Amino acid sequence: MIIQPRTRGFICLTSHPEGCAENVKKQIEYVKSKGQIVNGPKKVLVIGASTGFGLASRISAAFGSNAATIGVFFEKPGTEGRPGTAGWYNSAAFEEQAKNAGIYAKSINGDAFSDEIKKETIELIKKDLGQVDLVVYSLASPRRTHPKTGVAYASVLKPIGEPFTNKTVDFHTGVVSNISIDPVKEQSDIDNTIAVMGGEDWKFWIEDLKAAGVLADGAKTVAYSYIGPELTYPIYRNGTIGMAKNDLEATVPVINDLLKDLNGVSYVSVNKALVTQSSSAIPVVPLYISLLYKVMKEKNIHEGCVEQMQRLFADRLYGGNLALDTEGRIRVDDWEMREDVQSAVAKLWEEVTSENIEVISDLAGYRKDFFNLFGFEFDSVDYTLESDELTTVASLK
Ligand code: NAD
Ligand code: NA
Image (cartoon, rainbow, N blue to C red; front, side, top):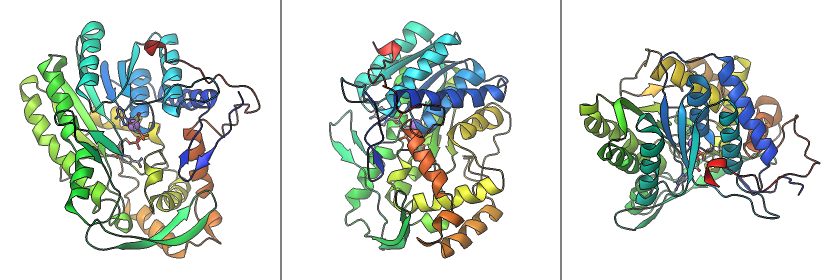
């Protein structure tokens, strides 16, 4: 069938297989252009491997370090007449490219929060790789069913204490308006968000992997966090999601303890604000990203997910220069948070309106990135042609 984008708010309901393959190919080309990562990872488990930072991590490991990768994700294949999800097509394209390059890649599609998928993953590691030396934890989800209690938690994106009023943009129309978001009414909203996006599941993974003996001596694990500017603090870092990120970061010493006798170590990497399926759901943030893109592109320091993850691996995790902050975190948001970048964004934030947004922000770049996530708007893809919505992920057949 011929697949066109169909959007509902910040969600795109369709994905384009050939376009997603193009997205993956471009990321692979970038990683290869940067050369091999010296002493990089060799056997890698990526949890949340199909889109965003997780996919970029998988590509950086495989094509920057010849690493065998097992990717875990939650995606849908296409059915006759209905396209699958972008992460499905990304993973199909990744596996095909890895196979062509002689690099091991297998995938597991299912709920990473469950004990079953952890068990299945461990069995696959035992059978094919023996052990892994890097575990990337890159899940972003609005809900989690707790594997021990069966309780289903839903996260919320809300401020805590006071209502938050600020500018926001509808990135489809460019209309800038004021949005007021009421704070959480109950502590349970905070607790639920922590249960979904905090560190407990990362810890469960490492506990299970360790108990099964599938973590190599010196194994590393990394999870991703965000801080951002003060103007988004009420909705992000000081909001419900920020409490979950605090919890994730507080899990680092707990996991370090678990890894001690294996000479292993865990890190949180604070990454840059980027257009992904998850970040487009957060109010106010898309307007900030549009302005940030404008400023960072003008200064020639703009990065996408793959540039971020390639730099994380090559310079920080395997480059001998972790450059940890005072809280012990890796900071690849360092260029985003530069004083000259932030003061330029803050000035534009005051000025931006529906009338000037296309000029003073990079809303066009935001939109293009958004559609690219689903395989649309690549010049090299002919969207008038029939697509194969039944593309398969080879290892999942
Ligand atoms: P994303 O939505 O692109 O990726 C989420 C991944 O998780 C996908 O592979 C998806 O399949 C997988 N997933 C979701 N629920 C799952 C489940 N139940 N079982 C198995 N897989 C599941 O998100 P992203 O933006 O790449 O976020 C990844 C991490 O990076 C998150 O911790 C996020 O907070 C963090 N981060 C994001 C930004 C940003 O601006 N996007 C910035 C800094 C940090
Ligand atoms: Na991801």
